[in-house]
Image (cartoon, rainbow, N blue to C red; front, side, top):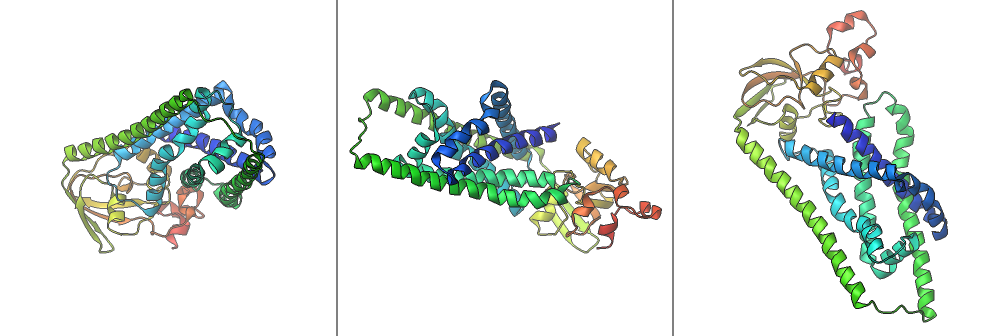
Length: 374
C-alpha cells in the first residue's frame, strides 16, 4: 500500500511539474503564447477535484519521504540515491516562495497572477529569484525523473517507452528554460520601454510594506518549519537506531569477500558501504529481485521476510534459502552467502523465471537464462 501511494502521488506531482514546464516552453513563441496556453495547462489543477488531488499528493508524498528517511538504516548510499535524496530535500525550500507567491501573495496584495507579472518580478525586480526558479526546475525535474525512471525500468514495456522517455526528459526542461529566457527578454524590453517613457510607479504605501513583511515572515516560517521537520526526522531515526542496539554481523561470500559491520542495516547497504558490487536495478526497493542472495548458513536466526519481500520472492519462484539483500536486515551473527546474480546483470533479469525459460529443465535453476549465461 505504501509503495503504491508513493508511486501514484509521485506520478501526479510529476505530471503537474511537466504541465508547468510545457506551458513555459511556449515562451519560445511569445509571452502572449505562454499566457494563452496557461488556461489549458492549468485546467486540471484549478478545479476543486484537481486541486485536492494535487494538494493531497504533495502532503502524502512528502510524508512518505520523511518516513523513508526515518527507516533508513544508514545514510551511506549510492550516488544515484544520494542525488535523489538531496534533490527531494531541496524542493520545499526552493519552491516555497513560488507557491506562496502565486497563492498567498496574490490574495494579500489583491493581484491577479499572470506570467507577465511573475516574469517581470523574476527578470526585472528580483533577478536572484529568477535564478532560484531555474534551480527549482533542475532540482524538481531531476528528482522526478530519477523516481519515475526507476519505477518504469521494471516494466515489460520499458524498452519501447525509453525511446520516447529519454529524449523527453531532456527536451521538456530545456525547452522550458529557453522559453523562460525568451519570455524574460520580452518583459525586460517592455520594462525598458516603460522606463524610457518615464512611466513610474508610486512608491509602496506603509500598508503594502506591512503586508510584505508579513508575507516574508510566513515564507520563512514555512521554510523553518520544514527544516525543523527534517531535523526531527533525523533525530528520531538516530534514536531508533540506538535503541535497537544491534550486534556485529559478519558476511562471508563464496567469492572470498568478507564484510564485518554493525547489525541493523540490510545486506545490500552493507555491500554498498564496503564497495562490494551488487546487482540492484530497483535501487533497494524490493521490486526487481536482482539483489537476491542464497543463504548457505547463519549462526543466528534471520528475520522472516516482510510481505513485500515474500511477494517478490514468490513471483520469482525462489526457494526458502534465497532472500532479497535489500530487505534482509540481520542484527548479529555470521552469515555465509552467495549472490545469485552477477553485479552487472541486465534488465532481462527483472523478468520472473517463467517468462525467460526456454526449456523445462531450466526450472531447476534460480537464474533467468540471460543471467545464467553472464
